[in-house]
Image (cartoon, rainbow, N blue to C red; front, side, top):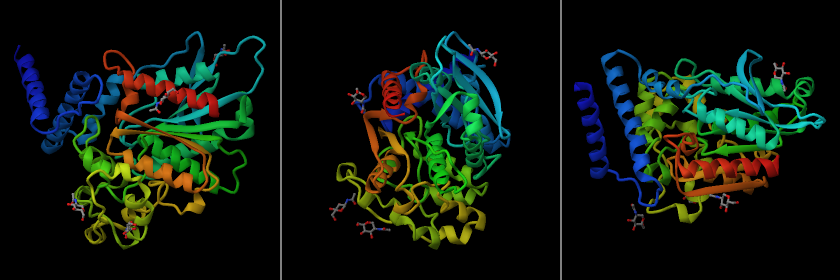
Length: 409
Ligand SMILES: *[C@@H]1O[C@H](CO)[C@@H](O)[C@H](O)[C@H]1NC(C)=O
Ligand SMILES: *[C@@H]1O[C@H](CO)[C@@H](O)[C@H](O)[C@H]1NC(C)=O
Ligand SMILES: *[C@@H]1O[C@H](CO)[C@@H](O)[C@H](O)[C@H]1NC(C)=O
Ligand SMILES: *[C@@H]1O[C@H](CO)[C@@H](O)[C@H](O)[C@H]1NC(C)=O
């Protein structure tokens, strides 16, 4: 009884907070459902802050609950064989479509990197399992869902390196043959932080002189692509949007790169750049890379330089300009031969402009890009494909994503 009242009270407070501060935009479909979902996320985030303050558990440790409640044990079904494998020391979930009699053709493959800000999430979460089965079945493709290690226990570059190791291991002729995969038809893909890892892997693979098999496509779903400017118009416009408010995204970035709390505060103020990183601001200059229609009411001002330099450990300032963490930070020449790209962006997402700027830069460099912008989309939508938290938007997104892979891989 008492617990019930407390829950009701917390829910009511969160609801009223919405009406007072930042109502969900009118054009988002199924608003009440998104409000409920977000109330849960926000309450958990408050609880996580509280636990960290009291020294009971760190913030991300509490937030990890989101991952745990959606974790399942993926099992084989009538269409797909699911196994847990170890690829060069990294755990992967392998989805193989069951062989039809007389089916001897080589298959396509997708290497999938889950989202969760490098700190949360797992390949074992039910929405990722659903997506993998759908793509495996509809494309008759092999799907590799990578269980890379997470921050803050493992800072950058560990999550990236895990992803890269899996890709290098899989793209060996002998390994591909074992799974009947066509070496010319392999894609890397991921959502949010997974989109960041997918973009980074695509770039690094191209630079690797020992690499024979290359990727055919990269499919990036609302990816994170840079840490230098955390005040782009989308960061400003969507700072209080559901699922991924600006504070949480800044927190993910800082926990990915360092344990130094001063870095989080500097990033919140967008004053974390140093002399070296400020020389790279041209690669993320939204004033030139974002089409006018997305500028909104915002005027460009370059992120401040200084505070970062004094405070940051050498190790962190190196990560800040590392394109394996921020794939936007490479010159055009490094983009030129990248595999064709599919990029999803959502209007109500702090990361909207990261994705749009990458689409602009890839096109300028001559890469074939399909950019799908969801006008009433919000960050993380693809995670909401299962009852009771399923959204029509999520199903449209999943269908379009699968369709693109079907036609382009
Ligand atoms: C599924 O995987 C198991 C174990 O690896 C294997 O023995 C079986 O032949 C596979 N089934 C199909 C239909 O591919
Ligand atoms: C960004 O672009 C604007 C407009 O072209 C320019 O005035 C500004 O100097 C640029 N800033 C940086 C840091 O590249
Ligand atoms: C942006 O610049 C214009 C022209 O200088 C100015 O009128 C407007 O008030 C500025 N907007 C903001 C939000 O600062
Ligand atoms: C999704 O695909 C449909 C059918 O091809 C298309 O009409 C729609 O514009 C796509 N959605 C977005 C946001 O691009």
